Length: 180
Image 1 (cartoon, rainbow, N blue to C red):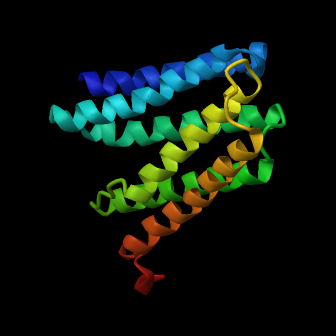
Image 2: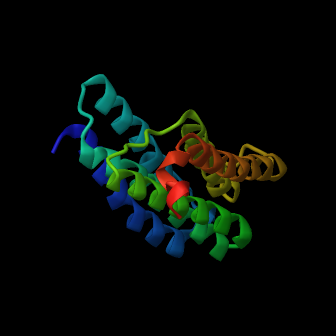
């Protein structure tokens, strides 16, 4: 297993750690937020390592976006529990992730690989930033007014929708609409 994939696995390992910390410490403590920041940074590290060292693998192409989705979903679900985000916005995010994951599986079954788009990358970064701001909003490290944090969060939800639509429009041939 190469170093990029090890960072992806590390991100997956941090998800249950983050959940347990959220259960016992909540967002009044900076510790769950710090773990989320570390997990988020592994996404950028593994991507950089994979591209710069030519370590791109089929395993990494599968697991990296899945780890991102699992991390974001876990954080958003925990934030629903603590009443920091609305369930309907999380439903949009999770529905998009299921739809695009299914779309990618369908594409792969036809030998088509769908690369991450810039919209998808903007979506992921905006989600990470919004979640980090929310996680630190209740701690001593709160430095952004909640109004701004909420705006950034809703922008991430809109980017989630835009990136999902973008994936489908650019790869509509995967659906084979002529043979429905």
